[in-house]
Length: 281
Image (cartoon, rainbow, N blue to C red):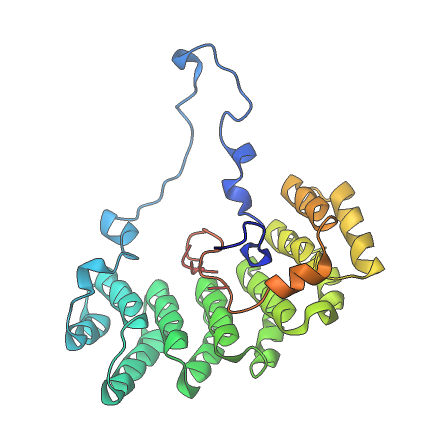
């Protein structure tokens, strides 16, 4: 059974925090007092696009059909095929076809989510080609593709691809920097302290939140000092609360729990794989 305090869960997405919900802490007298007319942007995704992560409709499709969909299908069909191929086991001769098709989609498809899902699938199949593709995609124009590429490199071999992952710490997008930071801590543990001390001042609330979370795994006066400062002065309430929690955890226990592949259930932000689809840290 999963430990509810397990460190790999990481800090919650600030966008989902109850205190950020409209009407939080309000006490209306009745339904007529509840505001429902708000300027909310809900996007233009179709129902099919919103349901693309559900691969059940194609789970029984022949491999050849999935490969055809990945190559020539609609955007939704290509996305779903890439996700389905991540879980498809096959004979050796078919495995080569799958990897080749996913590598092509990851590097040439015009849709960013297809590229993202394809590199995710490649990492699950493993192999040298998957690493080569993921490394190339850390320069993709779409930030969520870059973020997924970092997750893929972490999954494949975070030590072998350490240089590329470290370079991602300076990416312009917070999700890429966050994924690189988590991977670095998983590899270096307390030796990641200098990088965490820099990240605790990152411009992104999400990166600062993760930096303060990870500092809980460092038994060092500098880590404690940074956490106390963040708990008192950070402009983000989420970061302050994360820092407060980190001050009370046992560093050794935190590090022992914080291991393995970047978790697929973290961070439900659009485009982040479930580290990114709802994104794989």
